[in-house]
Picture 1 (cartoon, rainbow, N blue to C red):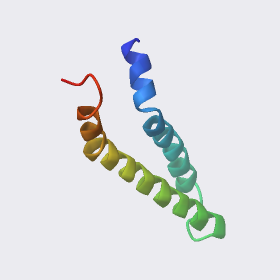
Picture 2 (cartoon, rainbow, N blue to C red):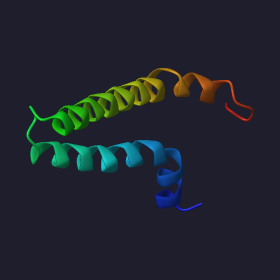
Picture 3 (spheres, rainbow, N blue to C red):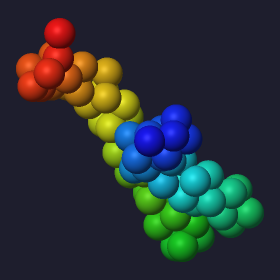
Picture 4 (cartoon, one colour):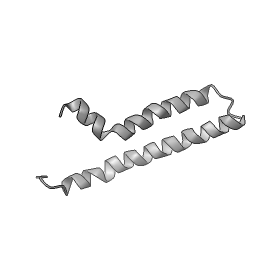
Length: 74
């Protein structure tokens, strides 16, 4: 498997969250944050960044341990 394909497979959720998160941030930047929809988009941006933080923690803390317990790991 090529390195690019492996990177895309291993980090597809992170890539998706970053791309869509940037879209939400750009949308929020052009909205009135005091308006109803501005508040909704602000909450979406907040939730997106929280999901991204949890994903990074999982990648840093849980996945390295699961690789050590996998068959064929030396």
